Amino acid sequence: MQHVAKYPGMSWYVPGTNAYLIAGPWRNRDDIVEILESRGDRYRPALWTSLMESIINTAGAIIVDPTEYKSAAHFYHTVKVSCLETVLVLRNTHIPGPELSVELEIQSVLKRGIAELIAIDWDSFPWLWRNSRREFEEYLDSPGVHAWVAYKSEEPIGYVSLTLYDDWGHIDRLAVRPNFQGRGYGAQLLSWALRQLHVMGAKYAQLSTQETNERSFKLYSSFGFKLCRGGYKIYGKYLG
Image 1 (cartoon, rainbow, N blue to C red):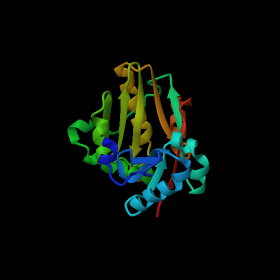
Image 2 (cartoon, rainbow, N blue to C red):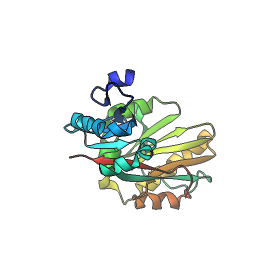
Image 3 (cartoon, rainbow, N blue to C red):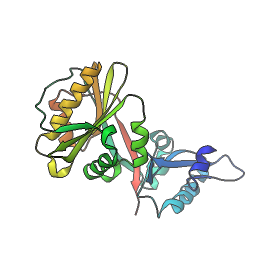
Image 4 (cartoon, rainbow, N blue to C red):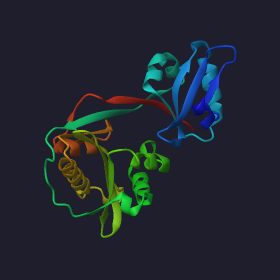
């Protein structure tokens, strides 16, 4: 009930039945709605229509939780929900790996605030993968999270963030602004982040990237990252 009250217009039910649909913001994005769960095959089209009418003027995409999608794949296919992204998971068991000379000034986000982080994120990632301020605020407050902004001649040009677990680390985000790509800064940031994890005591590192992002996959592979289990698909539909 707390979820329903917090996100009005995103959850629906059919009176006198057990049919319902529960949705909410995807990754703290008000402009992307995720269907988390539904019940009642007979009423699913009506529930879908009610949700769509509620969000059509405010949302740019709708995401369907993978478990929910599989439970009603035929229906979602009929309303043109499909796989938007395939996410690959890669692991490197030989860190820190290649040590590159870093030409960048790297500072903790805690010293500079998150405004620059958000600007770089939105400039560097496709619309679907941009983080909202709320997402960043919650993320940066999470245990084990560290984030840094990279500067070139005092201009913020990229960032890297990671989470340290018991004996391993996950590189959560690595971004270089488009105007500064192709100069080796991404490789420098990756090398620097892997060294940080090594110093912190991590024995191995993982990260994820989109299957379509061949440039990033090539970079990670050059540092010894290899495909491992844990990949997943994102199902959804762009609106408008």
